[in-house]
Amino acid sequence: AEATHPDARPPHRWHETVGRRRLEVVGYIATGYGTAVVASIEQQGSTYRSFYNISGFFIDGSPTSVSSLTTFRNYAQTLRALFDDPITTVCNFGAIPDEAFVAEDDICNVSIIDFDYFGNLADAEKEAWLARYGRFRFASLYHSCSDEASMLDAINRVIANQS
Image (cartoon, rainbow, N blue to C red; front, top):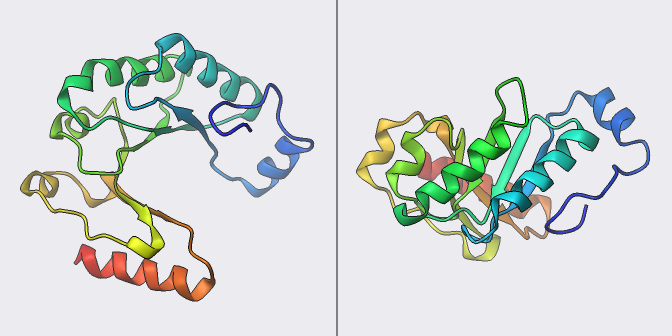
């Protein structure tokens, strides 16, 4: 798929390859930190649903300010309306968002609150309200690890920060 939009049709043998492995696939939705129009979000979601047999969405560029909550709620409701069954929504905030984004279960199932290049692995600032939600509601996302040892080191540091 293109960096910010799904391809018009899946790659050759997509369904055979993914279906055989029983993978859960989510579609990438770019929101421009709340600047994308709902029609674009709906079109991206419809294409993923039609061609890729997805089970949810990775919503990138998620805004963190409560002033964007209504817009972001509209994005989530638009995407969820494309499905009959509940879907998974992973929201990439990249920082700790306003609690209102996490308090509403119908917006994000998982919130990425720590995002960085591996070389700049940062300790997420802890806020008291995070403890009110299950630890499986939050995740960290790191990229650009050059080798397996570096990736294992990153994983071990994230685990150490969670205790």
